[in-house]
Each structure stands twice: as C-alpha cells, then as structure tokens.
Image (cartoon, rainbow, N blue to C red; front, side, top):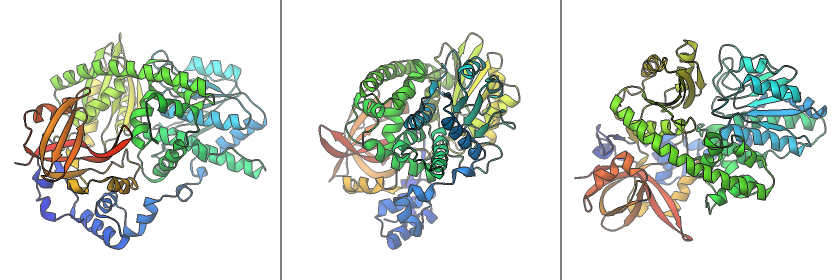
Length: 589
C-alpha cells in the first residue's frame, strides 16, 4: 500500500504537527514511498511489510536475503579485528599448557554473557575458569589494581571482557600474569600494555564492526579459536548453541540490530526457544514467560533480571546464572534475581520521580537533561537516565553522590555520541573518569566538578545537534485501518525483525478512531478500546501517567482521535488477540 503524498501535506503525517505528547508525526518521504511501491510490485511483498523494508532502505533485489539472513553470509573473518590472531593463539596456548585462567567481567548483561560464553567454551574443553566481577559500589566499573594484582598471583592468564580498554594502571598491576582485553567501549589514544586488546572501537580500527557488543567480540574470538583447533585436528565446542548468550547481550546492551547483530539475535532467539540453557530457562520461568522469547523479552524481561544482581545485589549472580549447568542452582539464582529486580524497581521509582522533578525545575529545553542528588543508588542511575531520555527526547545524565564522590550514567538519542563527549570531559580534566559508547556512558566526578562538567557536556552535545529539533518527532512507517490489523499481518512484519536499537519496531498511524472505553490499569498504564465504526481494537498505553496521555485522554470517551503505535499479539489465558501498543495520540477533530 503506497501512501498518498497529500497525507504529509508538508505539515505532519495526517496533519499532526503537535500530538498530545508534543511531537510532530513524520511519515514516509517520497523516496521511501516509491521504494515501498517497488517492493510490492517487484518483490511481491504485502503493503505494510514493503513500507517497513523501504524505511530500512532494503531494495527489491535484497529483500529475500534481508527477510532470511544467513549468519554464514554475514560473518566476517575474525582476524579482521586487530590483535585477534594474537589473542586466539594465546587462549589456545593456555589450553595446551593447562594454565590457570581468570575472567574479569563487567557487572551488566553484556559482561555476564561474555563471561558465560568463555566459561562455556573452556568447560567444554576441560578447562575451568575463575570468574571475577567487581562490586558496582565498592570497586566501580572495570579492572582495579587490587583485584588484578590478586588474580595475577593465582592465575597465568586474565581475560577482561566488556572492560579494560582504558585500564592502563590496573592491567600493569597484574604482575606475573598475562592479560587479554575483549571489549567494545571507546578506546583512548593509547592502549594498555598487555598481550592483546581486541576491540572494534579502537582508534586504529576501520569501524566496520563498531556495532558489536562485547559478547559479539568474544564470539568472534571463539570462532577464530575453533578454527585453530580444527587446524590442529581437534573439534571445538558448538558455537551456534552459544548464540542465545550473544543475542541476550546484544539486545540488553542496546547494540544496533543491523547486519551481523541482527543475524546474531535472530539465530540466538531460535536457540533460546529450545530451552537448553538452565539459567535462561529458570529466568523465563520465574518471569512467567509462557512462550518463546522475542527481542522485547530479552530487553525488558530477561535482561533487567540478569542486571539486577550487578545493580543492587551480588555482582556475579547474573553471570553465574548464565553459566550454570545445574537446573536446581539456576532456579535458586533466578528467584534471587527476580526478587532483586523487584527491589530495584522500587528504588528506581523513587529516584526517577525526584530526578524528573529536578530536571523539570532546571528546564528541559537544553541539549542535555541532567539531575544529581545525594544518596541516589548508583545501580539505578542508568535506568533513570534512560527514562529521562524517553520523556524529553534528549540525552540524559543522572548522578548519585556519596559524600564528595559522584557516580553517574547517561543515555543518548540516535545521532548523538554521548560516549565520545564524556570521554572528552575526562581528557579535559573536567571529570575524574568516564567513557562508554554512543548510546550509553558512565562517569565519576567530584561535587565541585558537577556544574562545570554538565555545562561543558551540554555544549558538546549541542554541537552534535542534541535538542535542536524541538519536542521531537514520531516517525511512522505508514497508515493502517483496524480491519487490517490481524495476527497474520503481525507474523509478516515479524519477518523484518528482530526489532530494537537502530531497527525500531514498525509503527503505524490509525486515523479517526473513536475512543469507546478507557480505564487505568497497573502502575500508570492505560487500557483503551478504539473503533472506526465497524471494527474495534484494544490498545494499551504503558506509562501513560508519565507521558501525560492519561491526563489528556481522561473524560474524552467518544472523541475521535488519530493514534500511533505498534500492533502486537496479546497472549492471555491461552488465547491470542491483536492489540495496539499505543505510543501517541492526536485529536482528529
């Protein structure tokens, strides 16, 4: 279904220049509409699916390969990454010499999954490994000198995963052991003195694999290590069976779901559906996940529970869960993580409310939204920053102080490199330390540094265009009518997935519907029944209270509205129905 050009009118899709959340609706541009028409005619695709692929720039010739990506066709030669040869050779040597191996990992999902990948692989080859994950509060992010020195006394090889690229001092403290770094965070001008630093975001890399998370980098190392084993006449472990961990880390770390990452996640979800990994099975069960997981479940159901240990509990609990082979142990750890996740939500709610109030008082029109306060738990500041970003459509930083020391985390919007800006603050001496990647970053600073650092960060982000486009835009793939919203259509659209960072789920506008019923549900959500006079459609608006939609819509049952959102299958009591996940609303009259 190609879209009539008059629907944009130069003003906004369906004429919406300012919705109830303050956004302008933007539909397909003429070039995208033409490409959608070509996909319908030449590739034989249905209209809605053609619109989604056109927005991603998929041509008719590439459509079949895009809808059924083959991992083998997208896999690069791991040796394309600098130091990969050296790192793989050193790992194989450690196996042959039966050396003592330690894994130092970050405390988030990416770090835990990366560690579990290595533990899995080494265990399959008869080598145990020591897992070490630093405490978020006591030790902070990345290797520290006491921990590295202690590990070096008992081990021959230390592999740092999802950390280490900027850890010159701690790696130098690992006297007596050799160190390999497998990371993806932005690197500085110099690298630590160690055996190898495999990182697609090194300054001397070409950037073609910069979208990988740490687990993706670890997976490529294992591909190269398996190749070396084959050359030596040995069979390596089954790496395809480990893609469930790569998929979980890729989605949870908000890595762009394009190219190789997309293939990792598609294949990893298939592996996960087999329910072969005790830790993920137990985690899905405790979360009451009653069907094969999707990328949504990785990012919003499983990922937060794995993260909960590193945020407010035992730092290594998530990694141990992912690596265990014991179902009983997995069940106990999953229950503990679920409880910690509940506690985390309560802490997050309190900090979120205070941070938003502080940010609003400061003003939400600048290029950066930020908040800082004494006693805010460092384990939730990143999540709260993400919530501020979602509400304001701007990069956000949230900082908690303990005495004079502040630890903060930031989240960015598409097109704004927050990690590079924060790394520049560190280089200029405006903060104690900081770094990360484009969409997320962390920082440490003193109370005296707070004001100057936030002012400078605002300036750097403004130069990148942050906050320059008003209240934000809502990009839409096209228009649908309620009668077209079927389970069959959703299944077709799913072939363009998985959806996530840099690959947003298809979002459509449904014009001139009547609100037949609405009621609050859960914690700040809103349930609606919409109709075009013939077909009714259920809709759910999550966090309607914080977005302002709840207050705007109350008392307006019967009024005509344009709505925008994503259609999905709602599973309830063994039945399935179509539901609109409502993102925005505009008055139609």
